[in-house]
Image (tube, rainbow, N blue to C red; front, side, top):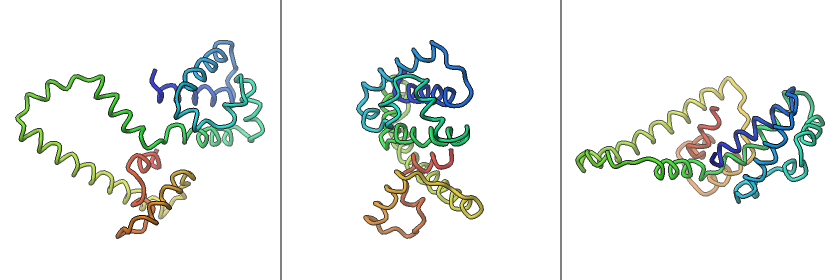
Length: 185
């Protein structure tokens, strides 16, 4: 498993333990193994919440979460503490790099160079269109729905607003594509 898969599995395990799932010895062993694997990552060490540092077992984590309220509050809290673990701006780049390492792109050399170049140029236009379509979509949704913006994303938006002069002052125009995508999720 890669970093993201470890994080997703840990999130599932902790959500189950915090709500209504019986904690087995296998769950405890998996929790310990996941923590050991993730502690090898600088990204995890830097962003891990205090609960990961103080809760050696799933039972201890469950007790910590019970103080947070009911099941809905616990799930919300777990989502919030996991956001910094998976929201790193480099995560998309990490994924692309991993794909490039694991996929043989040799068959793409069958295409003439001019077509390859045109594809690269068009991909930038497509990304630009998709990114801005998502921004407009979020703006429209926000006219009728309340959208909670995570603190870390809001901090980035505020920094970019100060450093950039943009034709549109809506927060989505100061969000990176990966963060805009997460808002929709």
